[in-house]
Picture 1 (cartoon, rainbow, N blue to C red):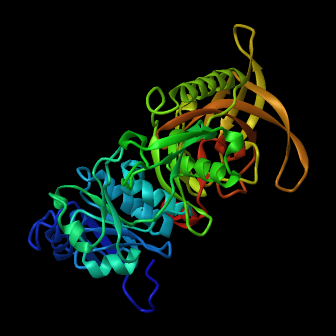
Picture 2: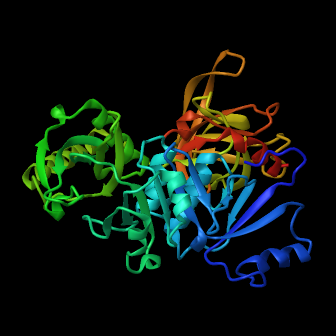
Picture 3: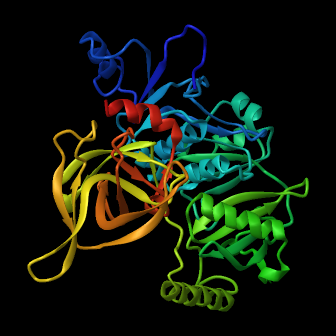
Length: 460
């Protein structure tokens, strides 16, 4: 993020294409906002996704450049994606880069918009997984920039959406790259060619390794792909190097492909590069298909058993700050300020006049007044009746055990509704009338403490 003393914050606005200074689909958008005095005092810059060059260099450093070779986004204070929908792969790579750098941007769902080699490469880099140095662009970068970032020829040049070794070229010079027909019609990845004796395709099912094959090119081909004539040797899990197993699992998790074929290339220094994480990969086709089908069947069987055993599968967690606004639909109460507390197991709600009552049908219920007397819940207090309740022992903030009534009701947060237990207690001297503990958070949310100040200020 920008940190230069006495400098203005820098805001980037991202568009798909550079339509010029006067277009509201590029610099004209910023100009109108500034002329109307609707923008705060900051430095504003427009960039176009179609112009960007993406790089992960030979030192493992990621950067993004404009078409003229000038670096962008590294100095951003905030980034707004104005138009990107028709270029999700490029936008996703930018969003992943910003997220890894800790640069705030909107909107965060862009992170998950792309699935080709370009955003995948940045996902692997962001998870500190070793990838081959790469520079990628729809326009051919200058010879000088390519040599500076990834080194001298020979190069492997392949498309971001290519598969089975298609659109994959070995180029012995910059001039060879220039000879590729229709270069500017596709997104290309340029990488140094690493001489090798073969690579691994590791079968990862449910983020666990079930074996794999070692592939070797045939004849003069530089491609180890079996679809391009390469040969293969089966490797059971117990025969694989422990580092390969660990890297394959990490790579699959980094790109969130739980069923994948992870391609791994031994490096000259004894380590490994991750070439690609193929979604699904070949299961009922290709080499060693009987072994792959048997392994995949074993995985499906384990998933079926895990469902009965209630083993939770990996999920994508939403990110929240230390303070949020929630609704409690059952009691028709909206917009309650809640404090997120990972140090507390139980959730707790401010309530008074708590007592058990007998309903006309003879059943028991819990009656209480919610939020009454709390300074941050004025106008929201009301008498409530809960049918699901019990009594639990809770250690309060002073470390003293106490018995509390606990109800079970749904909480609505950010469009998601979850039923959860909540203890009832006097929180009149607490900042928030509602506390959300680990039991509510686990498996659903990650807490980003950096969001705490802004989230709190929005409630004032």
